[in-house]
Length: 230
Image 1 (cartoon, one colour):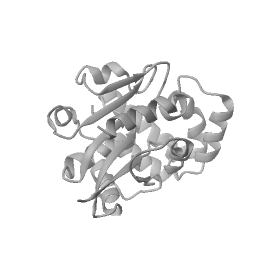
Image 2 (spheres, one colour; image 1 turned 30 degrees about the vertical axis):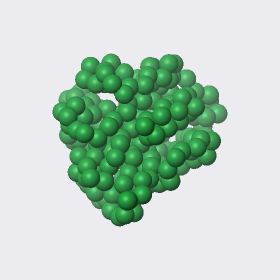
Image 3 (cartoon, one colour; image 1 turned 45 degrees about the vertical axis):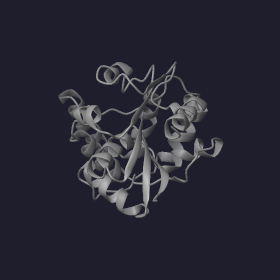
Image 4 (cartoon, one colour; image 1 turned 135 degrees about the vertical axis):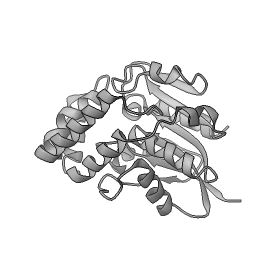
């Protein structure tokens, strides 16, 4: 029987180091893999990210995916393209709904800003939007950590997210179990935008924004463990 491994997929504006602030403090039932794709510029679509990530994973394993934000979008593509390899999916502050036209315009503005000003200019003002509340020290630490992420990689990711497919019907009809972990005060993805379509397997974290692994790490770990161990 193929082994099962947990794959943690990071979000936009961060890399695999985001999991270093979470994983060492919790215990999970399966081996953990944390791919890093923040610097990739050769993926035009999220489907491209999904294929490239899966090709880097052990060929003799099945996977439970935990996708944060953009990582959740990639997880959807992986589950859709390779359902025989994906056992379960945790959508951590992520959505299956495609961008609205307004959101696409904002993505274009982000890409333009990154091209003109670079990551160092972008990342500081971007980070506070991810938290319901965060200490200045944490925000400064994260800004320093990610200020040197290549702008070209962030631009590629921005455009791929802008053009991503809608997976509402897939999530409603697939046999792959999904868990949604959402922040009550998430300014980017509201719980209501998910619970309009999905009512089962939803955990809403009180007083949490878009970064539950920082704002409510114990609750996030407990929700993941309960889901993957069923």
